[in-house]
Length: 608
Image 1 (tube, rainbow, N blue to C red):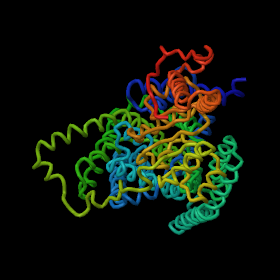
Image 2 (cartoon, rainbow, N blue to C red):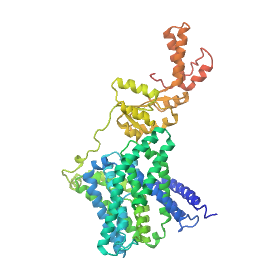
Image 3 (cartoon, rainbow, N blue to C red):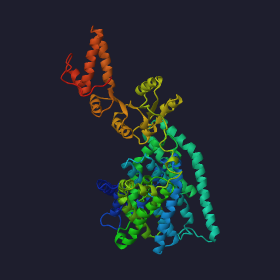
Image 4 (tube, rainbow, N blue to C red):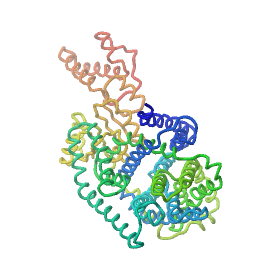
């Protein structure tokens, strides 16, 4: 019976251990990734207690790799890369070469083969995108020039690793792995490499031509149906289907197929919604991926080979960072940019694990190499916050010594003047209307007639297509989805109008809008007196409940028809409106005519 439930046991215990480990890591101000890896160690065969099924865990991890790479492809931005290409491309390639050489040097010292050293060095050369993005967000540096340089650098690293995943199986034989026979010498090697590249090229041509047209068309048809569940299912089917098909038909890895499935979607207006819909499943299986990696780790290596572990950590935290620091300074960029990039790269993560696992499966990398890579990842991720913490003290010390600072910074033609990041794009001082139905549509129509720029956000695909045909900037997606408000230019917007009928979304949208633009004004369509009162306490510009305004409009007309002067009728209705804004509208009217409870006064008055 235990064998029959090994999938359930591994899945449940893996997630439970990961939750506990991630929660403890977060409390200790460490990335949750550290907790996930430790959870895998706890569920592995090298520690007492529950032992998960490694075969089941590896298959779950493969799904995690597919969804991770799909997410990388979805967020791949050629525009961001081109903006920093003069430093990111040569810098990342140079840093990878230096780190790979250092790792291969260590492997040679330990008596490993050249192939093992190459895989080992490559695994130490690439930083974790997940850890980097979280660190930049915590330091409010993601949208700065320095943060963009670091992200562009990692994009190049990711592309190099994708290429490595493609070429490594073809070169496994010559690198000392257990690939197919390499009889025929160099000619056979080149033939195998040529066939592999040809298959990959054919796959890319089909994906980037046929897929780039078929996938958006398919999602457009699904989105028009209006079912959120069906759209999510379509996204997952595309990601997993292309990944599986690429492996079966073209011999391409699951990871590469999933990456280009994401790339196909990244240039469409479905990318934000696709990323949001696949994110929960991606997060869950990514956690299982890190747990499965931890299950393979033998923690006794920390005791058996402490000097080797320290040498690996030194390559990751010091060697790789110093190389990046020197490259950035050599290209004429400020010291603060060099420090930010070097701190960002002082860790390794998911691509290192994927590459190490592939090297192990091909028989190139020894088991000890994977253990050292995992130990280096755990320790470097744990130490990474300290790397960022040194930036300000170092800059303060250098600014107090201008001669030293000027000697370090190389003045040239390359510096920050070559960057195009931060240039004004998209609308400015515009109104964003979330929910462009009857209410939002009327508001937008009037604003447009007054020459006020408007951007609409709606999750009805047909409505978005109609609005675009009418010349309105319209974004398809759920405004609670990360990236949708950004696509509408929330950072430069003057007013955020929430006219959506879904009240449960209001708080999340308000928080997201204020995080991106703390000074943005807000106008909200509320659905109850309690909600109006809550929004008032949160400082929204105006909150209006439709049912109340309908009631008050009819009341004012009724009073005037029964002989009350129009100004007096307006005064009574205004008094009722203000009382209602105090959250007691319904109770006051239940009290009977003329009993508007004057002692109840609103805590905030709105310009209605």
